[in-house]
Length: 227
Image 1 (cartoon, rainbow, N blue to C red):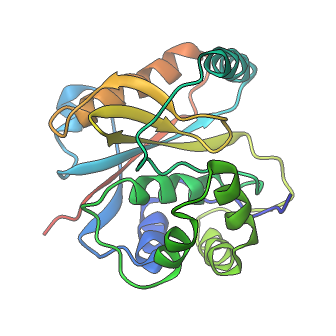
Image 2: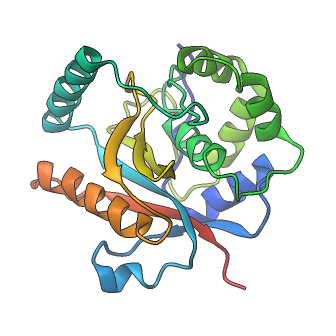
């Protein structure tokens, strides 16, 4: 397993990252300052993805294990065009979440470059194969490493990271949680373009409520840039 330097939940750095990937400047990463309806109104629309950074506590890991066991027994099915990949590179969760966010939104125009090349290469692969392809992709890894150095704190790739990024997207009118550490995408019920932000906020609240002693949660949105 390769070890990458962890990304910060810094909207400016992550916005620069997706633009480096080839995403047009019509789209940015922005902070979600609160999950209540009045706070969500401040986020520029449309919102195409919600990204949650949360602590991998014992409570969360227990929930994850139970969830994966349950899903393995039911053999869930998903839309063929849902882009999902496993994460095999340590500390690559920020990049995986951004790729999940962009790859599952056709409205986000993607120019020639690193991410388009990766998506073209992996479009017909299984999630595990995509994860291995990311681990071997020198261009993506070098881009990640360069942006990881631009945060406000000094990151050590060998330091144990306690937090993890996941993405929430609307695909085929269903809210999906995409987490490269899990064997499957997680369905969180029906959604729509109009209700996606509120629906994703509801699931983020469930993460927080599951671990009430923890305060270290950060929510970000992939949204339209303010003109």
